[in-house]
Length: 348
Image (cartoon, rainbow, N blue to C red; front, side, top):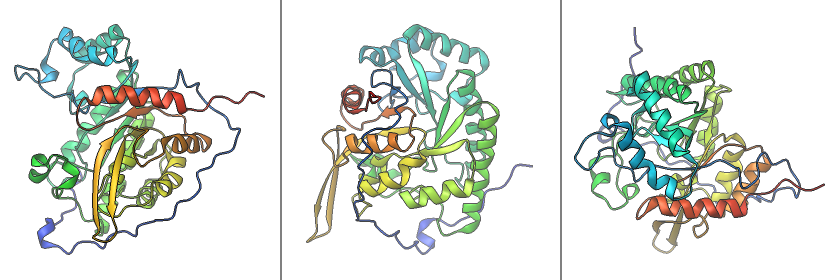
């Protein structure tokens, strides 16, 4: 029998958990002058994200129902921007719902486009949702199998679920209250989370896939320290961390320094969504405003962050994300920036 999710009350009927402490210290991220580098800047896998790709065609047809030649046309802008790697998002195409014949068609389309699927991301389908958790867990299992069938080595998962009504109305969804989230203080919910991600880790390992859990506010991955503790509780070699710094830095509230986040999370990373934000802070009033920007212009110094992570063993894919405007084009700009700042193998 399927495991029932632990019950929990909506936010209005429970006492909020106290906020996690904010680490304002800025540890040094100076890396050694010489360290092993697993790829050259030119061949490091840098994948396009699909944040701006809608789940329906212009006539309203769901993407999963389109003919292969329509998939190919929809993916052409990724090729035109110079990408050879792609992160397939279930918000665009629900991989876990495709049968083997459709997966074969998708594989052929990607091959024709010259695109390698560096990772698959399960978008906003939390395995802890009080009503949809078990269905989301089953979908995550099917997505792992689909990723393996496509030769994809990483599936990215999170605990955040669909946007709440206020978030959907806001210009930037992170400025509005989230929908219902499981209480971090409930030990039964946390134990359920650990069991379900360990179960998914077992499945991933069996089919030669790694899982990467994405940093996200107000979840068990809502700070660097929380994410590492949660990863340790899962305790599975096939489960690593996606240190998506932007998901935390964009909060319009006090946050850990980006240097602290990198120092804590980068050594556990196996996959990395990279995006950056501008932050304006007024200590006199406590006002914080954030806005998406390119990797080189935001508050996170990715030149330092990337070098530190690689020096501590990171060898995975970068996925260049950006909200607002022409995100795919900004992603291409960010990919070019990364290739400029990625370290080269030292010459003896």
